[in-house]
Structures are given as structure tokens and as C-alpha cells.
Image (cartoon, rainbow, N blue to C red; front, side):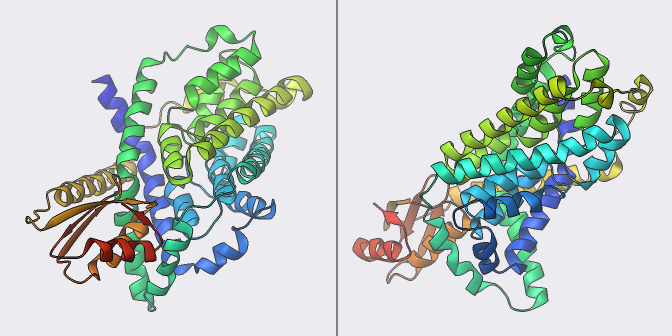
Length: 405
């Protein structure tokens, strides 16, 4: 029962931000030309990374809400380096959390927090750009999307809603649910006073905070009362900053989705940058800056734990749950597609997103004799019905930019 309550509470906290992320992703997809991404966020070097970090710092998106937006940037032409920079900078802070940080933790935290997010994002983005040179086939195969977008405002609004609340939900919904469940398990089974005995050992306390905070979900604003509570229990301001940085910047859902979208190495660099950056800034606060800058008042904590779940958050939770359920139903129906004996299955390599999936399905559908096609993005299997020439299917898929067996 405690797990279910934690899961529902976490869903309520995440849902508004996730839905906002889906909406922003849809608007970016439908209204922002791909050449804008190619001009500002593609290519090598530090400039795209800095631009992505600057764009991400003020946005009020959490570690889960930023995922659909970053995926839209990546699929629209942004480089791995710029996408990683955006993923690191955005969830750590935002205009809303900066104001809340100032009110509860003081001006020093409010200034250092976005600066730390910016530096960490640039470092992580540059590192990803250095070690991840190769680009995926998605960069070229998905390039046809810009020619297929509606030209009218009404059409683009419809396209943005479909992309954000259908295509992206289908693409990342299962991973999001898995990460949410695991985060809830961690939240339930890690004791609230786990860090209380580590107050005399700041570095050990920081590493303990990283181990617990990175996998579980906590938003940039929601992490503020937790950080305040840690400091009132005797932990150092640097340890509190580690929570403020590492907690919002990453969770299990983020890592799994980044691994899928940009590769395991990019995901590991992303995670390592967050951990190293948060600990480095935490140590700097504890050993280089005056402790008086980070003094907190115990009276501030009393109001941090009395808030209940707003009605708006509950409505968003129900809407998100409905979208995820609809996605599961669509996935189930696609697996139940009935084919006749004139069916052949192919393995397609290089599909990274729903646009790749659509490109493959469209290419196969144009082959003479094909009467039905089912392309499964997660397994890479394309099931083709009808009396067709396998050589023609292979040629069509390869012409579209993918490998096929």
C-alpha cells in the first residue's frame, strides 16, 4: 500500500511537467524548422553545447518533463552533444525553482545553482561531443519530416498535438512507466534519516546522496524542501547542493531513455558529468565559500511539508495515465495484427524513432504486391503481407536509409 501511495504521489508530482514537455516537444516538431536546429544545435564544437545550455537553464522542466523536449530536439537535427547539454542543464533549475530556492535557501544557493547547472551542462555536452562522433541513421532518414508538415496553423497545431501526445508517448511511454516504478521502490525503501549519521563526513554524505538521489525522481522545485531538511539535520550546504543538482538532473527513466535515443556511452557520460559536477560544486561550497552564506532558519521547514497534492496535478495525472493506457492499447493491437500465409518477416536496423518507423513502413507499402505492413520499433521487425518480391522490399528499405535482413 505504501508503494502504491508513493507511486501515485510521484505520478501527481511529475505529470504536469511531463505533459508540458510533451506539448513543447510537439510545438517544436510542428512549428520550428529543422534548419534552425541544424544551424544552432548541430555540428561539433562548444558553441552548440553552450546554446543548448543557455536555452535549458530558464525552462521549468523536470528530469522527466525535459525528456520529450530533448528527444524532439535530437530528432529535429540537434547533435548528441547539444542534446546532452540541454538534458543536463534544464532539469537542474528553472525560473520557478530559482525563485523558490531564493525564498527557502537564500540568495547564495539561488545564484550558485544555475551557474553550476550551466557549467556541468557545458562540460557534459563537450564530453559527449568528443567521444560520440558517429551520428545515427535517424539524422538523415528523419530529414523528410520537414517536407511533410502541414502548412496551415490549424494543421500544425493538430500535428503538434499528435506528435507530442501520441507519437512520443508511444515511443517513450513504456520506459517512463518502468522508471517511475523503480523510482517509487527506491523512495519507499530508503529511510528518511539515511543521511543523518553522515553529517561529519561531507564527501561520504555527498556520495550517499548521489547513490540515492540519482535513480529516484525529484523535481527541481520539490528538491528544495528536501535539501532544507538535510541541512537542518546537520548535513553540510555542499551536500544539499548535490541533492539540488543530482536529484533533478537524472533518474532511472532519464538514463534508460537517453541510452535508447543516443547510445549507452552518451548516457554514461551524461550521468558521470552530473555526478562529478555536483560533487565538485558541493566540495567548493563546503571548503571555499563562507558557511554564513548558506545559513537556514528552522522555521522555514515547517511550511515545506504541509502542502497537499493540488487538484490540477491530479487532473494531469489522470490525463497522463490515460495517454499511457491508450499507448499500451495501440501497441497491443499492433502486435495482434492478423496476417495471412503470404507473410514474410524482415529485421530492419537503424530505426531510432517513430519517424524512422513511419519511413520504413511507407517505403515497404510502396512495393508492388504488398497489402499490409506492421513495423515494430522496439523489436526492429517488419512483417509484410502480400505476394511481393523480397528483393524489392530490401531495396526499398535500403533506399530509405536503413539496413534490412
